[in-house]
Image 1 (tube, rainbow, N blue to C red):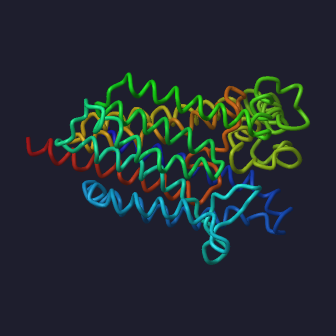
Image 2 (cartoon, helix red, strand yellow):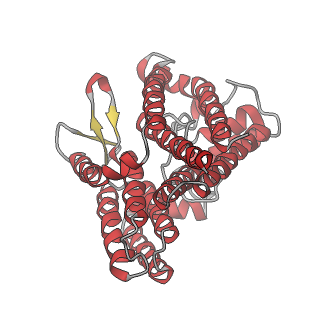
Length: 367
């Protein structure tokens, strides 16, 4: 079975499973906030339809077209990231400026677009044969400035999770593209040190770190969601309490349909279902790496590699947070968590990945 066919199957299962879990997890919150238990699933379905449309289009568009749009897309992304601070356009939710206001009560999160933009511009840069990838200027300085411009705006939005994710994926794409690894390691350590200083001077972020290190001491404050996520796994056991029977989603986990949906999977369907989700993301990782390895050129290899690593790493971080292995980051579980922009952009990237596989198959048939 071809990697692209397996990828379609895996993503389809994750999306359909996500719909089932969203119906279960979002109903209490929808009823409480909007008087409609189907409020969130209705919005999610609208974004899903849009996501499937853009995925189908991306699967048919030659991925080299995105390289031609790398610079305009980079500029547009920077503008959108800055617009979140414009009154009347940007939305301030829970003290964070991360969203743009759209018609029909919808919102758009530019940092989700920045995920693909970062991969696209770096894959284009390192995939161009003219680049002296081993040198400092072309291999480190210029791509670091490009990546850093987006990361700076995202970090200014106080979106530490997206900053870390895009920064890590960007660094891996640069490494895969031939950038000198010593400079990358030094830059990574410098970036981590800078983040550490910012966290140390931010009481809310520092509270999350302390809650991660000592959750039992902060069980009623910063570690409240983490502790109840762990309670959910314990209550679910091997077989789960049954679909729709979660206690935590009704009274204790306000983010049950978003960042902490994996905990409700464990509570309602048990460890077996949780492991099944993990295995599906492992399968996605292997399929994506297979597509990357067979891509017809360097740009395609780096694009496929970046997309695959981003989706897989985001899933790993989300699961790590929910299981208490990582501090809270605020990243959704791909394909499953509620989040319109995230779902649409992730499906779009899967479409690009499928086109790379399609172009690769054409090249191999000619040979």
